[in-house]
Amino acid sequence: MEDPWADSSAGTSQEPTLSSSSQPDDTRPAAAASALSTTSSSTPSRPLRLTPRRLVAQPTRLQAVEDDPLGPLGPLGAAPDNSNNNNNAGGAPPAPPVKEQLPLRTTLPNTGSVRRAGPPDPHRIDDDEDDGGFASASGPRQPPPVLAAQPSPVRSTMQPSVSVEQAAKPNFHITVGDPHKVGDLTSSHIVYSVRTKTTSKGYKQPEFEVKRRYRDFLWLYNTLHANNPGVVVPPPPEKQAVGRFESNFVESRRAALEKMLNKTAAHPTLQHDADLKLFLESEAFNVDVKHKERKEPNLGESKSVLSSFGINVGSTQKFVEQDDWFHDRRVYLDALENQLKALLKAMESMVAQRKAMAEAAGDFSASLHALSTVELSPTLSGPLDALSELQITIRDVYDRQAQQDVLTFGIIIEEYIRLIGSVKQAFTQRQKAFQSWSTAESELQKRKASQDKLLRQGRSQQDRLNQVNAEVADAERKVHQARLLFEDMGRLMRSELDRFEREKVEDFKSGVETFLEGAVEAQKELIEKWETFLMQLDAENDETVFYRPPVIEGSKPAGDTAVDRARARIDEDSD
Image (tube, rainbow, N blue to C red; front, side, top):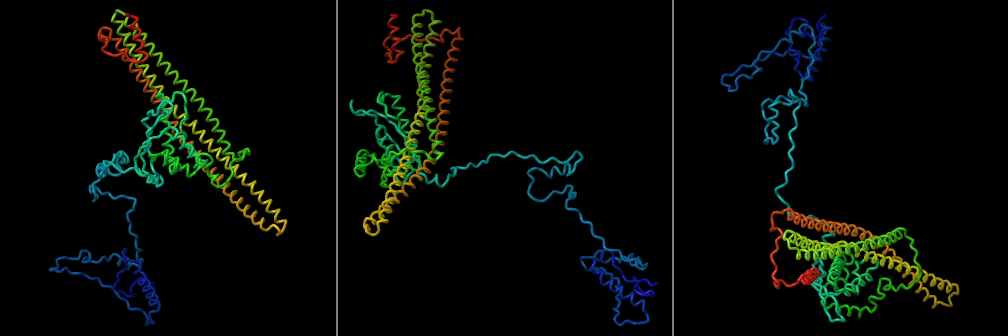
């Protein structure tokens, strides 16, 4: 049988076949040529005109040119490999092409000692690869150490960003100081200097100072309450008829007035009130207030938003709270007020005990001094006199601590007792708004009843009917305004009570911290004094530890304190 893969039946010259490196597209014309050769060999006597002409590829040899600088063309000048031709002559089909084996992407080549091009390695990873490679005999390579974050040498001088509302809000810093007594015996009073620094554009200058007395602060409180129903206005300290010129009382009142003005100026609603501007800025305050009262005769009496609407506020109808939220807040405020009053009473008792301890320490110091003057032995009189001086220091510490407790924690308790009264006054204004709404509703029902009566009478009362229709429309307008005022006041009071709670937490936290810091500092001072005294007692061999130089008579005038007077009496008795 004739080999179908042969080029001819006789011993014709062999054709070069496909090698393992041939492409798949070159095998298709070779297969078609093989099929045609099979057909022609089966019918040799019958010539086919459509039989394609066989082309036999001849091997080509390239000769190197001596003058060519490139020299021979490498493998192209070598002799062709006829091993595949010999195999094909034996009748075996050509070998299919073999896919080239490519290295996997996950396998890393062995780079050896070749370093990668690029910037220098800060973690010296290349050095680790040179030492042990990626897989050393001792195990996987450890990751490079992570350096701790270093602070930036460049310090930012920019201020922290704030919200647009805070940036647009004016700032106030108000100080109340320089209290001094003016007037004669019948009209004497304390005058304070009110200094204001503000960024508000509504004032003439950024810094100014005015003189005010206590009744001016009271006028400001009442006016702000009338102008802003539902707002919790910070109240001034209460009046005091006895001891109002004592230094401790004047100082506590000054601090309370200063806190009142700063809280009022920090309130988002009250800081824009025209009466606050008048109080802080007016040089002729009494004249401006009288001029304002002439323009508004009912100022301070019945001026309010309700009266400006023409709504009657004199109803005696009992108010029953329908909103559970306001009812719970009212109960909470009553309980809080009782607790704060009890705390203030305990605070006053503690302050009185500190003052009593200070007085007792002064008496004890006077007695020790008297004993040291009659003692002849210097080894005993010296320690007694030193202990007497130590008791004087203890007395001063107790007096100072009692005053600090009043000014740091006691003033906060008193302030929030007054603030609760201001909140209750806002509740009363809300009740009046509800009563005015109810009064306007009842008045509207009366007008509508008159209107229905006239409508049933026909057209005979047309003029009266027109008047009643106008009265009904006016009553409906008043009812609508009263209802809106009551609802707006309720929403405003909710936000005001939330503000009250936030400020209460901040103020009490700050007050307690200051109170504790003052107590700790006082105890540290006492401990230091006692330790110094004990160290002096331990130095028994040193006779000059408690040495006191002799006091020459008349060299130092006697003091006016209780201890000095007691010492003077004891010295006179001993003489």
